[in-house]
Picture 1: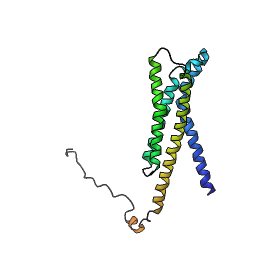
Picture 2: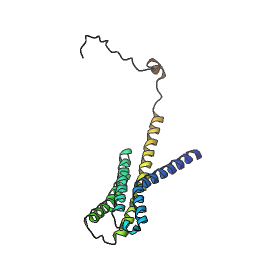
Picture 3: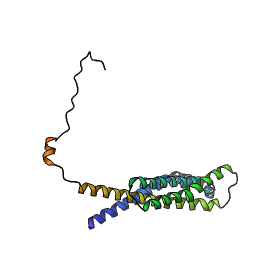
Picture 4: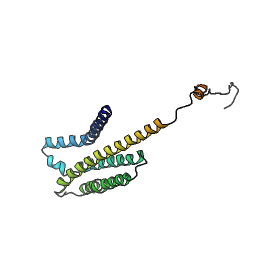
Length: 184
């Protein structure tokens, strides 16, 4: 029992590291841009550019993908389907929609309102939270799907050993011999 719990903890820890590695890979180019703007003395300018909205939209898209993966991985979700669909709608409504609207508004207008400097980091934080939640849900559902598969395999009747000895290998492939004069 203790070893099983230890394996679950290791799996959860690995999932957490993998999730944050994904987030860091998405944010890395934006970090480089922010560091260059910091070097130039224009760090506040980063908050007024669509960079964070782009990152939030990317993470929201990844989160929706993970939520959908959770839906298709385990077909027998019962009451949890509505919850996952709620998280998909929440991601669309709270992060992806506003991020795309901000992105389009900021690239189309010369003057960006000051509230954008506050809204973009909030959108990014929410997107990171939803992506982490999506990965956890998808992994939880895929693990429960694997457990159900293992249980079905364990309950499957034992094979007929005598029959298996008769058919111990695949049937030989019987191809007709062709000569040079045969046409294909």
